[in-house]
Length: 387
Image (tube, rainbow, N blue to C red; front, side, top):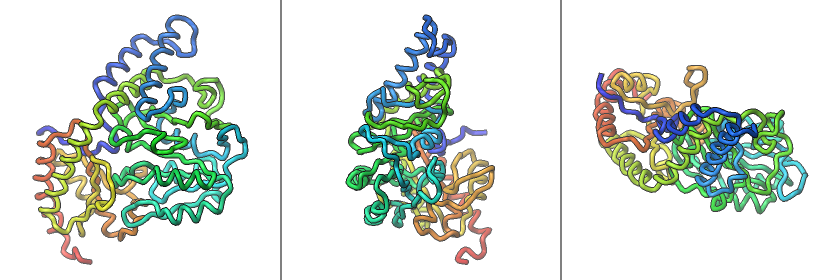
């Protein structure tokens, strides 16, 4: 079989060589980062190096980084009424989440269902700022959670503007920056984020590692995992030093290569979209009128079913994903496209194409060649495309 072309970087990125090396070194050395002997101190050194590397990715203080098992846990840790800011201990009384958030944010963390409101978005998936302003009047001390960039469409939210609106309403802002970090500027202070979630494996680190970065005066009085005093009491449990060492190395690599990688990925993404629309003029690229990540394209062709197309592309050596969320192997309707007002028939055919730092021009040409064959063949099998 010919070499495969991987276009599912938003799901997970291949492990970077520097991350693998850092993990191997940490595994060989061993030690518990909480121990005071030489081996423990060495493990602590690797852990704190990783913390500084992750902090540098988002322009934060290393002491503000709380390591977790991934971004899902980081989101759950952030979404709690028991957030204290500036020494004020009054709990957050309401949570506002955008309609296009990751399911781990839509779940609402430790807020009761009746305390959660959903913020509408426009046809491009951007938060309705007027609705945000009006809805914040419902709460005295709101917490708002809006992602930096959508994992399906790549659409980038105007986080700085949202932050100003939230802060004017005496609120705090949590930003799920999983897809944006390492691809677009992600300075926490510039964004105005009070809490920010990150994931290792989106950056080329190992799976099973993530972080919640907090503003220095933010305190979470109700930790999600209690027990030991690890992570300054915010997250109990022995830290996974090898995984976090890999996370740190990947974060540093992503930070140093971001500008060059972003320019190159944007050019390849544009080449892909131009080729797709030339071959299938009826194709719809979701969120194309809004700012998007340089590596992401969500496209659908009327009459094309994503489930069938994904199998056909896979057989040709190309890994794509659907714009739908998968749960237990069953493809479900995309809540992102539904919130954007996309008709279910069109949304069911959405294919997400996401690129990364290793994506080559030859990969793009392979996908475009396969696109012409796969799409035309599958559409011919649909006699009632307009139905």
